[in-house]
Image (cartoon, rainbow, N blue to C red; front, side, top):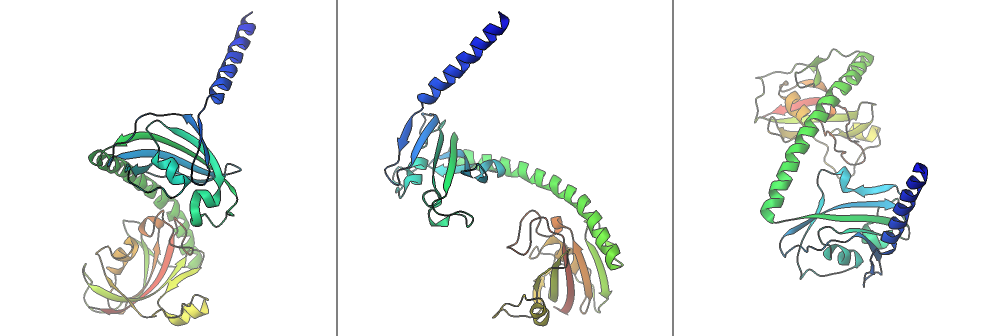
Length: 307
């Protein structure tokens, strides 16, 4: 008898879910003919000038995520403006959003992204979109909200950087041992080798140094250099680019932290090698196609002049 009741309860839930599904509202945009379904319908429209915050997920037909606000520090947002022109079906959907709306739809990549669809997609590939609007804020409130989120994200970023420093220190020590380097380590985690001492007074923050350099990934791949012959040897030569010492005002945040710290250890004529853990380099950001995120960087530097 107990099992029968459980079965009836499950059947009731299934029937209820089926009824709810069949009652979902579906609309079609006037432009592009996108058919979209309200999983849940909201009612509060954002007043002109205020901001509607939303979460967004875009995926392929096989549910591989292309973009998701869940992977970003901030949600998406749009400022309400009744006079904003509607150019396509995506505009229609976003500009009609109300707080509490949860919408699902799919179309081809050309309709969803316009001409800027990702290179791994064809324009007629099916793309799925899930969109949910969850809050309305005025300008003061959204500024305070983003400041709070940014502060929390900065704490998380610092925690991740501290973990990376520990992990990468092991890799750097292995690299130093393999290359037979006599390297020293600063408190921040920068490793350096002064190969030629140089002459003159110690450099202070605000000094301009002219530096020849070659930058490598830890696997030896050259990603940039100011030396023309080296660029040509490594098939990295760029026609029209000036190959000459780079002027850097040190200690002023003009360059990555590892350079700012390392150059202050040098003098005119110094030659050195910097082994820079990613938090002192470009961190979690990739720099074009040549420097992946969280890359340990190795620089050979030669101080040509100090002013």
